[in-house]
Image (cartoon, rainbow, N blue to C red; front, top):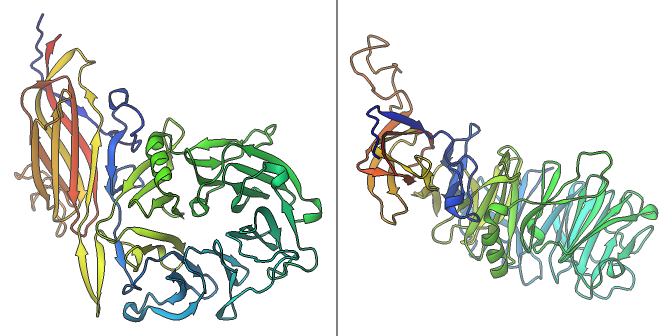
Length: 519
């Protein structure tokens, strides 16, 4: 039997992709709130898809990848490391940005920078601890009693003292300095914890504080201690076995939680709210991209991360693979995970290190050897002498297969309407696929040229709110239409845009159709 309904219907797809990226679930099992591709995009506060910001180079190239960055908050100075050297980075003078160099004597620049009071300490596998104090960098010569070479791979400045672990000759022992003396490793109440009796042959990867506890991340286990303020009462609270941290620099304090990279993806260390729960359950944060994350961490343990407080973004990047994942914790999906998008960078612009600074916001150290700020909508290269080259990048997303009639009612397709805010001069493209076909049934390219100046009128007439010039663009908005033909039971669409230096965000998608054949 065939039934036709001549009435034109409009399907407003206002929740398309609102939950972000899911590459884990088969696309036919997903509802339209998920994307199967989400490249170089983030979400606005209202949940609209928009371009990520660009990486604007603020320095000439040092000549080597920037392994670490930090802001010294008392002076607002930025320090960066490259090729075994630590520099002060003068972002206000890009042609002479790399100044006041200090040769560390280390063969690499993968430092963990830690602020303790008004000083900075730096830790790296196989290297002596460095200290920035009184305006100069130097090597910390003191070491714990009985240790031949004190070269901890990680540290923590918290609870009134310095903590360090992962030394070459004993990777399972945690050392702590004298109270209020971060250089006093063999005096006063300085001491150590031997974790071999706690987790066997595991090694210390990172040390953190959480909810007033001392958390020691191993490669395969996590040990949690109570009373870290008083080392005489330091007591083991819990050992989480079988789950650890694969990368020191993947760990970030995210709100009242800790995010970290395990062998099976990003996890969080979170205390339950119930008063009768006194343990720390783990939560998988990256379940919607789990297989990707496992493949990436198998390929490379070189991982960096940052947390952008004002935007609610946990950013984790694999520098050797040029892929960056962004977890938006301002919105949690029905699967109790943040929504996820991915970033890519052309050439050698991809992040090699990250830090969040109070003065400049999010900063990146690039593989190309530049220090960058996160701003604008170009990946801007600094050529020297105040000359920049603006490089557009492409933001793109793909929807799941959207069922138009419960799988047995076809729809006679008429038109797809898309409204985009901003993006002056952006080249955009739209492709629509039908019924699991691999080639698009319809496609269109258009340029976003919304009205960006002058007086705003509801319908475009200068004399009246309801003048003769119907449907003229409202200030800042651009409507694009893609004529459709034929019928379909399932639709999938892709959209991309090449940046032109302006923010653009998707406001609405409307599908016009008529009911067609009933199968």
